[in-house]
Length: 129
Ligand code: I3S
Image 1 (cartoon, rainbow, N blue to C red):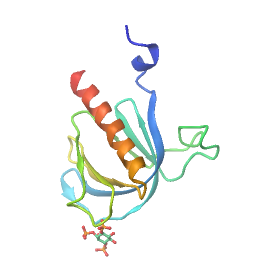
Image 2 (cartoon, helix red, strand yellow):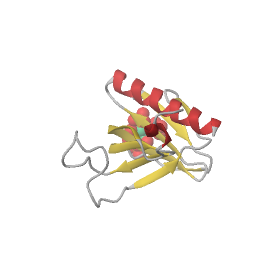
Image 3 (cartoon, protein in one colour):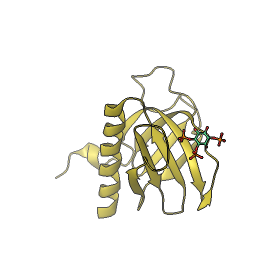
Image 4 (cartoon, rainbow, N blue to C red):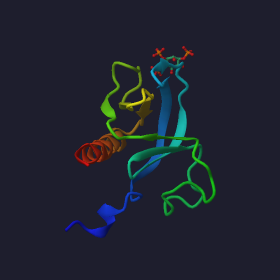
């Protein structure tokens, strides 16, 4: 049997500061607007907060009572390198089933690679469910 934590849909898989821009909303192309975001990968969602929690790194969720800026459902999402979509280095491209697309970027290559692995693992797990 799986350990209990793996059955918890709200288990935080990863969180941290990344640069983010949406590039499409519901299939409609958007103008890029890069900015820093506190990103939380948990359950089937990727959640974006304007700011990290004040007690970081101990608290992985956003500030108590703080509302996420946005969140997306990763079920069926497509994950790819974003190098054709940006002049920045270390860019990931995510497209969700409803056609929301965004880019995630970090100047630290290892950090972005870890996000790539974590996102791929979650999306593959959701594909099997
Ligand atoms: O894919 P693009 O259009 O070359 O993206 C760049 C532009 O969106 C630019 O904004 P304006 O066209 O509104 O000035 C952004 O400032 C750049 O950051 C975008 O390119 P990168 O390569 O940084 O994703």
